[in-house]
Structure formats: C-alpha cells, structure tokens
Amino acid sequence: MKRIILVSIITCLAISYLQAIYYRIPYFARPAALGEATVSVLGDATGIFTNPASINNKIVSFSLTEWLLDTRAGSCVGSYNVMDYFMIGGGVTYFSYGPMRYFDDEGNPGDYFSADLWQYRISLAKQLYNRISLGIGTKILQQNIETVKETKFLADFGAIYYSKLFDVGASVHDPTEISFDVGISAKPVKDLLLLVAMNYQDKAVMQAGIEYNFKPVSFRIGFNNKRLAGGIGYQQKGFSFDYALTDYGQVGLTHQFSITLK
Image (cartoon, rainbow, N blue to C red; front, side, top):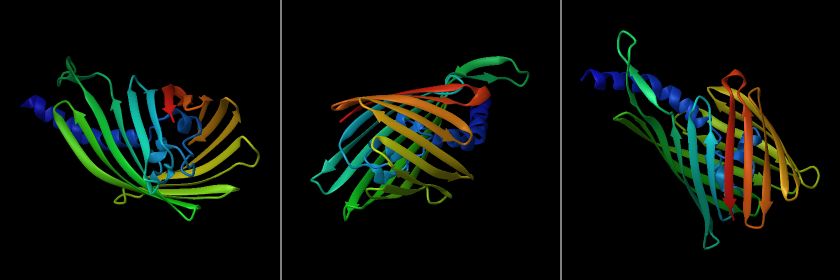
C-alpha cells in the first residue's frame, strides 16, 4: 500500500515536468539540426510532430535519440497519398527515462522501477489551390510510471502557404492550452535554405536554421533558445541518412540518427 501511494505521489509531481520535456524533444535529426525551426517546411512526414500540414509525399522514417541524463527516444513515422486526394500520416514515439529507484524515508535505496512515455499520432493533410496545405492531427499520449498509467487525447491544427520565394507555416497544439509554432522559410539561392520560427509554450522561444545542399551531402546548423545545434545529411535516390548534435551546455550533448525511405 505504501509503495502504491509513493508511486502515485511521484506520478502527480512528475506528470507536468515529464510532459514539458516530452513535447520539447525533436524526434528526428534534420529538424533537430535546424533548431526545430521547421514549421514552414513542406514535404517531410516527420513534420507531423510540428505541423500536420507538412506531409505531401510518401515516406517512411525511423529515428533514434540519445538524449540527456541516460534517457532515450525512438520514433517511426510514415505517410501515404490516398487516391491523389489527401495525405495521411501516422507515427509512434517512445521515450524512456531509464532506470529509476525507490528511496525510503531515511534515504536508503530500494528497488528499481521504470517510467516511459508513448505517443500515437495520425494526421491528415490536404493541398488547396496549389498554394496552401491544411492539416489536422490527433494523438494519444500514454505515460507509464511503475503500475500507474495516464492517457490523454490531444489534437493539432496546421497550415502552410508556399510559393517560389518563401513558405509560411503555423500550427496550434492542444487547443485547450496556449501552444503554437509560426515560421517562415526561404531559398534565396539554389541549394540554400533559411529558416526562422517561434515556438510558444509557456514562453516565446526563437528558432533559426540554415541548410546547404552540396549533393549528395547536406550541412545544417541551428539555434534554439540559446542552444546551438548542427548536423549532416546524406541522400541518394529513395534513401537518406541524417545526424544531429545539440549542445545543452552543462547538461550535456544529444545525438540523433534518422533514416528515411522514399
């Protein structure tokens, strides 16, 4: 009984903190390397975590993240064109907090227990007038701490306006809370992509990224809330590999690896 009460207390205290961490993890290497400023980028199914309007082609992508303090995350997403009428995308992500341990009232260590988070997502996107893409997504967030589970159902809405000169994107997450992304991207010269965005969740965070394609290799650098990130990508027909490194200062570095099939 005492153990159950202890786990329940831990759950109540940790829920908001764990969700805050979970929502701020860029689950794929390319967005991470670009400072997560990809809300206006069209054509990448991994963008359903930022903007459901971003999906417009068939891909499958897998990612592994070595995150902070011995935590890890894994992701898989895919998208499909339904009769050339709309795009459907889906994905699942997993986040493990690593081994956690009980301590009694006197500070003596006890047994280990587990804590993890799962997210299941499905999104629909439709292009209108060859200039606007609209998207809607729903997700199930399941948190597990020992034997205690919490499940939430949430929704996202997004739009992207795209032209030859620039693209503008915006998305709203979990309408019951104030959380949104807005950004712009442009290609001033061939093979150069510039990104600027803002994320708001409790506070405004500026994001920026630069990508230069020197085929078959892409070089990336990003900035997000005083954090620097960088990465590299390798592309061949129907296949790409991406890597990202993000500096979290004294907390440490994160490494992310993604493979995409088109």
